[in-house]
Amino acid sequence: MVSFVVLGHKADASGDFKLDDICGGAGRLDILVRCVNSAFFLSHGIRKNNEAHLVLLGGKSAPKVVTFVGSEVRYLNPDERSTASLIRNALLKDPGAESTKSSPGVYASSKTFEKLLEELSAKHSFVLLAEDGEDVREAEIPENACFILGDNQDPSEEELALISKYPHSKISLGPLSLHADHCIVVLLNELDRRMPR
Amino acid sequence: MVSFVVLGHKADASGDFKLDDICGGAGRLDILVRCVNSAFFLSHGIRKNNEAHLVLLGGKSAPKVVTFVGSEVRYLNPDERSTASLIRNALLKDPGAESTKSSPGVYASSKTFEKLLEELSAKHSFVLLAEDGEDVREAEIPENACFILGDNQDPSEEELALISKYPHSKISLGPLSLHADHCIVVLLNELDRRMPR
Image (cartoon, rainbow over all chains, first blue to last red; front, top):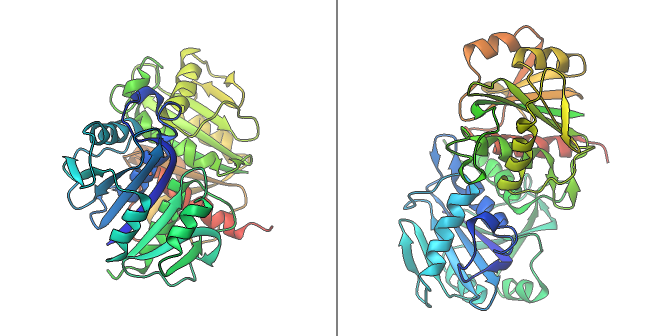
């Protein structure tokens, strides 16, 4: 299983935002929903082996983690608005420490990034996307990779310190710095090419 | 300059649609706006050497072509809604045969796909994205490539016949069939790697 963690540094964790204003009022939630699109959509279906964990760090209700599970997810469409709606519904249930299902394949909790890493470390090897990392085309990518990305801000020093508690590798995707959702597309194309068929 | 042509087979050419309903009422305009995002956005700026031509073939006002020019474009944001708004504004000016500027770097006309190809052929070599094409990592890509993509439908037999009037190559992007906007991301990553720096 391939997993993605996307840090939404200002993404509103309360769910109290308008679907017409996911860039502004929702703290650049648009970036996170595009990452969901990239992580799951194929022309003719959903990438069932993938999971995406959105870490919402904005506002008084933060932190919250909203998780999409490819093998279970339903009602997921490629457009931003409908995915933002799934996220808002998950947040409005005011989830606690335990993951709560809000719709098939969509879960939310009040987990911290630290706690999320601790849980994921049991099954995954972390891979940080970083411009000084090894080129994705050359790099060894662990089978149960969990890729960690920032939104429009790189992971902070504190976040990097939390990641550094675990063994992890760093990879880069090319000569130019890309949006998080584009990074996921390039990554998955590389993985698709390596996958035995 | 790298150019993209995206065929929006049902995309509403009238501009008479709601920004809350770009997937349904606007005939999957969401696909076209995501292609604009992929064609232009970098983490720290716009790909100024790129152009994207959206061919809107849905409804009674069809055909219309809306063109985004990277070197001129302003007010372009990565989210779907704001790009759909730029397209709607361009269409609502009821453009005629000649390209009309609706905002900086955004133009519209009532050109047919056939006429668009004729104009582009003067400066570009056409490259069709097709699953039976040569792998993008191996293929020769012309310097002034114009990549032609369908939306959620492949180009029709008629459209392929129009393309076939011109010399063109065919490339594929990997083992799985991807959404049009994801195809553009993978393509540009390959071009970024080849570009002298």
